[in-house]
Image (cartoon, rainbow, N blue to C red; front, side, top):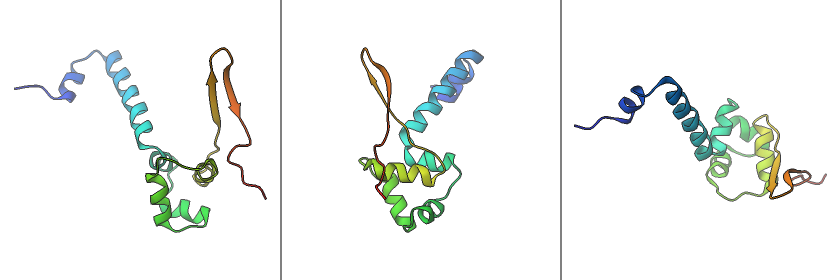
Length: 106
């Protein structure tokens, strides 16, 4: 009978296990998106909804969306207690930080 993934990882050297765990955490965070962000911030959907002035189902909908306005993303991140930075990497120009995107005018 075959071995489980957990058994294979348990037989790996500790350094390899650490790399697998680190990469697994990175992939998990990438896959989960806004829901993971909210959970990392230890905020419920209801708490984020109150900060944004919407109802909880609206937060569930935002977390499932794959295409958001930058202003919606910025507001969600801020409601979770964070700040949004947009980074662009261009060949030959390095990393650029775009500012002023997704800001709502008063």
